[in-house]
Length: 240
Ligand code: SAM
Image (cartoon, rainbow, N blue to C red; front, side, top):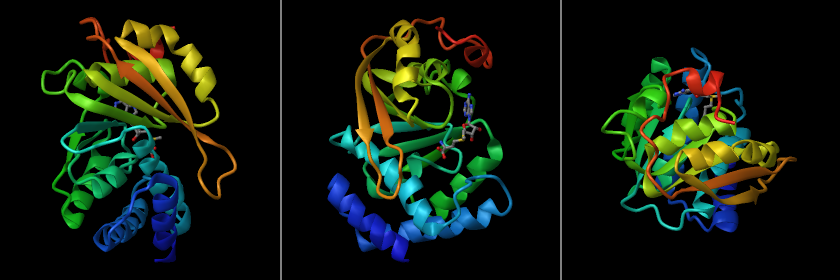
């Protein structure tokens, strides 16, 4: 697939990631499965393989710009939908344990099919709402890295993500041009939940007009027990 040769070139030149033939084969299979399942359910509005390679795969891999080493770490992708950004990270970094969480069970059936077809032993799926998982023992403060793309505005997303993150770990929110405004809006929530803004990185992807941003939040202390609040409350009454 020509689109994956382009992915390979950009991953190397922009991110210093060298994709093996086996990994390129897995991305090829992922594209096939994504397009096939997308006929039956709404996983992505992007259906051109060249766009998928840039807007889903390369975009997901930009997280490597802010995480120097993934080996031995646990990552959770909150609101993973069709598996982004979690699946490309799992393909490229087999030493990273990746949990893909979504509140919609049928999307996780797709994830399970992909994990099995691609032989991704470092992937598990979790059917849960972020607000519930953040209060449950196996998930609360259990992950080194918490990532999310296109799930909620930052004050809400802070309450979905920070309770899942270990003190000493990091939350990475992938955002578009609203990143600065959303970060300012979330200042109170980030502090209340035990976080501290570390950086806001601009990422320019080839062929895209608008820049993308990685908002990196350090988890500097435990999240108070009252958070996350009951499912639905963070989005109805964000901490602002
Ligand atoms: N992250 C993917 C991407 O960027 O392509 C999917 C984004 S999609 C717009 C948002 C996803 O977040 C949906 O699959 C939805 O079911 C999930 N979601 C929304 N609120 C959630 C919550 N509170 N807990 C878990 N998943 C949630």
